[in-house]
Length: 90
Image 1 (cartoon, rainbow, N blue to C red):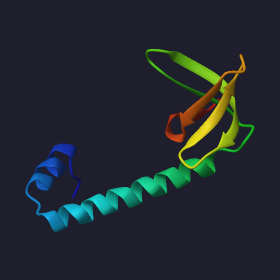
Image 2 (image 1 turned 60 degrees about the horizontal axis):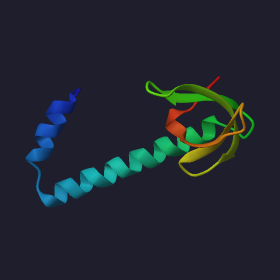
Image 3 (image 1 turned 180 degrees about the vertical axis):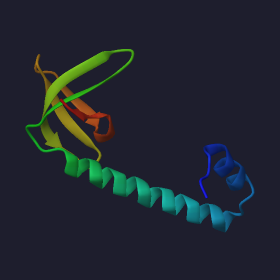
Image 4 (image 1 turned 90 degrees about the horizontal axis):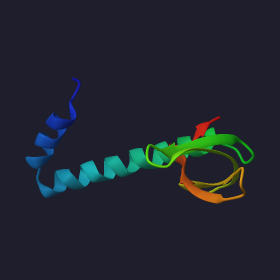
């Protein structure tokens, strides 16, 4: 059965404390797995793009990969601490 976000929220509002703890644990495990997958996608030296609608898009090279973020150096030499989920291979 496919849940929509609103249905999941409605179900959460009906749960007791123990059930909520189980949901929180499951979400934490899923986030950890996604972070691990993101780390494996990139290597030091990869050219990547990142940014947002307000600031625009930047291109740079990965200098260091941390647990949840990467240090990216752009063309001007500025070092950015970018979450791995915001990076895309250029």
